[in-house]
Image 1 (cartoon, rainbow, N blue to C red):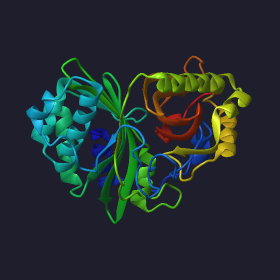
Image 2 (image 1 turned 60 degrees about the vertical axis):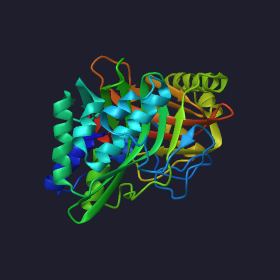
Image 3 (image 1 turned 45 degrees about the vertical axis):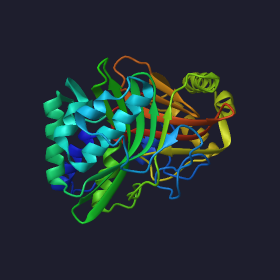
Image 4 (image 1 turned 120 degrees about the vertical axis):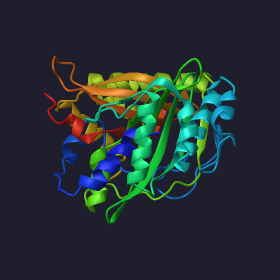
Length: 348
């Protein structure tokens, strides 16, 4: 899992010693910007404390079905079964059991990092080879799962990957989108992250999110396609329309007064006023439209693969993954994962 991140971490360990300009102010205007902060219903990346069990089921870090390899692949072909497959594969990756881990991928699977210059790995053998190479380069590389949202053939998760690069420890949250084929094997996975943050941590920079060492608890929520999830999806649709229409009044009505907006590429959180101000700033820049892609609604959460652009020919499109937690039809918490440097060169 997150093999593209693993490989880039290995490259960073060898070559990531140069300084880099902080362009967080430019990218932060696109879709809100924030760091990690505590919310009411779930432990948020980097905040300390433990996750609640208000929805779905929870498991401690490192726990899975207790099966490995072929045995685990006999789990039911249901959203719950795929949620467990995701966790089992993750645990095998963490343990470095790459022979068993490879069995979870289709022979022609792909693994990428949207928004990064990295070329996606194609094929089971290439994906596993990257994981093995990265583990050799970063011996203390570890991972943990924070949140898993599962629907029919898609699992979207918040994960943490840590490792020591030179004299510094890095710890970055990553949004992972995994698609399964009809045989319940992974046919594609995408890891959304900000490589600049990881590089900054490796360099001991002060203007990036501090490294996160560990998560506490794991929350797993399986989609029920019930009235709550349908209501939440409608609220998110309105949010997307309001952003693209530059309608601040409707946007404000969809954000809870106690909103915590967290962008993995930014060092600080935003409250409701700050998030609104940042979104308005994005409308005057090159990324004024927000278009939805793959979407998963599970319990209080709606996770969306989204694209920021300006709908003009030749414009740069910035891919992102956003996970929204809603309360009473309003967004109470949001996590946004994107590659900050992907916005470079975007045209107004």
